[in-house]
Image 1 (cartoon, rainbow, N blue to C red):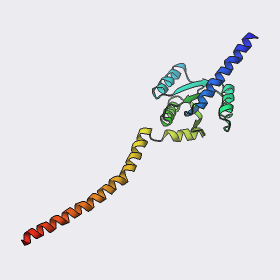
Image 2: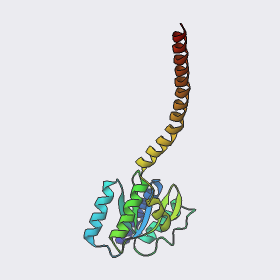
Image 3: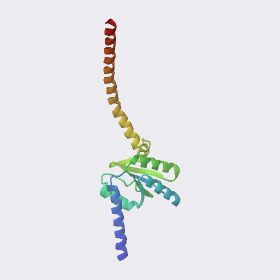
Length: 180
């Protein structure tokens, strides 16, 4: 009886752990890791750590219980079939998606099942499309350039008017000097 209580408490703790991951609000990518060798698994973990992300291998039944408690409006029963791991994104979901896309190319048996980002369920194809977006820094730089462009055009237009006025006044001054 004591053994069974310990096993039950262990499962409750694991459900709470997965529940915490779902509640964190970070981007999640569900993957099938079947067939991944141990040394490849270590490579995956290390490369994820470089971008402040990590992978968690979970039991489907426990993950489904946690998902039903936290993500009530989403049906994840199709995701939690077969070997499932969760890649928990760092601050930059696009970087994580890019790295996962690289994993699918590098390791034949590694595949994306689905993902959750901003409380929305994404298909594997959606995660693939997310991976082709430019990085956060590039998007910010592009936005800054787009915001700066109208301002610089206005400044150029206004300075052009001033410049033209100075040229006309200089021409008038030279004409008056040549008359006198």
